[in-house]
Length: 254
Image (cartoon, rainbow, N blue to C red):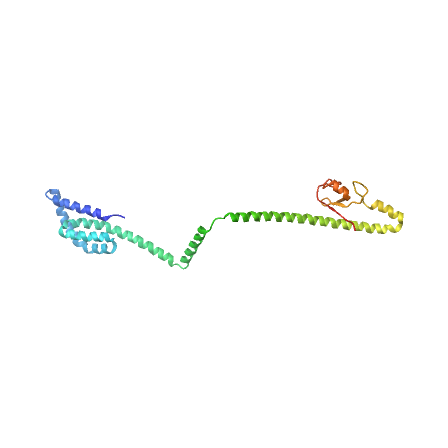
């Protein structure tokens, strides 16, 4: 903020200096011109300047104006400096006050629009919540890791269920084929005991490894039923027919 008192004090000292050195011709001319001009300006501007200072200028400037009025009554030539100072200061003061007044009016007009205060309040509340919300802590990270582990277990369970469904379909297909073979054998057995033995020897499958026992081990991936229980245990997960590696199951005939 601009300090007015030093400025006005320097102006008053200047006029006192001219008063003390009035014996010089130049100083005398300046004093005479100042006295005449100051009286005319002071008589013309004193009422309006006084009202402006009282209504718009800061209290400190108003106090200084009162002091200068008293000083000008005793030494009228000093009023010239007062008049020039107020002529420069007062318009600037009015301009600044007009800017502040226009700004206040624009803010009041914006707040008078329906819904604007509520929107500003809501936006401020959201910003405050965002600033207050705590960052994710270790508990949230552990929960996220557990969730990912559960998702992986779920995918593994789905794969196991799909493999079991494929195995069940393969067993059902083999059971239907075996039932049809048994029916065909029963029909052909009416031709005699020798024919029944011959057909049984020719059509009943045997183990592809030992050629003596009936096959009871099924490889679910390739669906080959070609090994007995003992040979299947020795063979392991690899099918002896097509060399495909996969799970195997044991079949028990009724």
